[in-house]
Image (cartoon, rainbow, N blue to C red):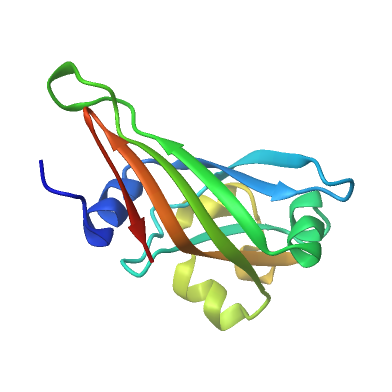
Length: 144
């Protein structure tokens, strides 16, 4: 079967709400936590997440912006294994409200009651550099 393109992967990522975002903790350990992409996935390999500036996630990214993400779809084609993704990338911490607005969805109001004006709000932009996928019996890698 043909290799998946970055555009195809981004489209499929929109259907997977949560990713496990992995960072390097202060002591060098790998720390992972679930993050919602709010269907904000760009064709150029970027994913966006919102969090509070006081989290370990933000502190980890300040120390080392290299991150990993893992995603798994809920079902596969014709009963096959579901799509699974392992993504390596670099995270950027954004504090610009105009950029928040461009990626804000109504669902985020549940977590951040004051919307883009929530004190301490930070947007994490992860730019993928390498994506490895398993899609049923097919697997491959996309360099971004």
